[in-house]
View 1 (cartoon, rainbow, N blue to C red):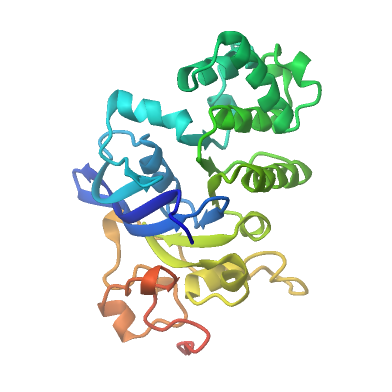
View 2 (spheres, helix red, strand yellow):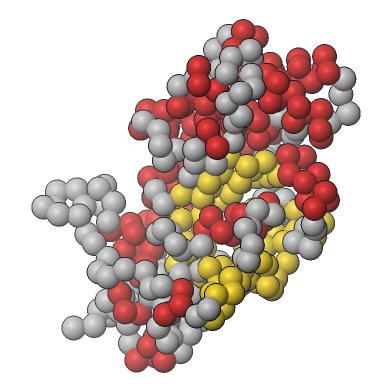
Amino acid sequence: MSEPILSIRNLTVEIPTRQGILRPVNGVSYDIGRGEILGVVGESGAGKSMAGNAVIGLLSPPARIAEGEIHVNGARIDQLKGDAMRRLRGKEIGMVFQDPLTSLNPLLRIGDQLTETILAHLPLSRSQAEERAVQALDEVGIPGAAERVNSYPHEFSGGMRQRVVIALALCAEPSLIIADEPTTALDVSVQAQIIALLKQLCRNRGTAVMLITHDMGVIAEAADRVAVMYAGKLVELGPVREVLTTPRHPYTDGLMGSTPLASRGKDRLHQIPGAMPRLDSLPQGCAFHPRCPYAQAQCKADPAPKLNEGEGAACWFPLPHATKVA
């Protein structure tokens, strides 16, 4: 891979509480290359959205980056504050949230919102920005973009609103898009359209995408590589086909086994027993060991090993050679 668009190294996010310091993101490292979609997957509370918020500078106090570095296009950004970070958003990094209504002002026409974003980041006149806004809507597949540019957010369907949000994220031509559960609230057919749109934009623009989701089907369809998170840590990282067909970490194996496709022909879906531990009561050793059918004494005593050279599984006894505990 050439120099990555996004490089995260040993990222740790801390939240001070009365019970102590919580680490929703703990020592996470990965890269995303030009034109690549990295799927970040895990249960709710795994830390995937918090990592995305740290990259774009949207951590809510008292959460803060305690350790590590974040580089975008080779420049370090984790230390940027205030206006410097605001200039970076939109210009270098775009954001697509789960609910498009949280990204759109219901009182302003779509075209006005796109135009103001373009003017804030690109050296264009207002007429040029308005023309660029229509082009952005057309690029994401809004029919009759020249007319719909004067519509308000409530005049679009959910899927069309999500397309508008993608246009808003892309209109200043950022090199990185963080898409946080962009298909969760949409019908299956619309989900497929949004996934196809993201893949097309990656190919055409060379945009890097961090795709945050809990849906393994979305990962299988959209991502080039996948990063699996559990209890704030990265537990597996690798090419999507390799990770999904031959997972090395027992947690990834459990996620794959719980999908309808993997359970086809069986009476019930496979279920990972128990629940993810609270951040203020993590077990000693590997955080996954109380739920792991392969856990040995070492897993209960020692923290899980680091990923080997950036890819692989953070597990003492990775599959397929691990033996289930009776």
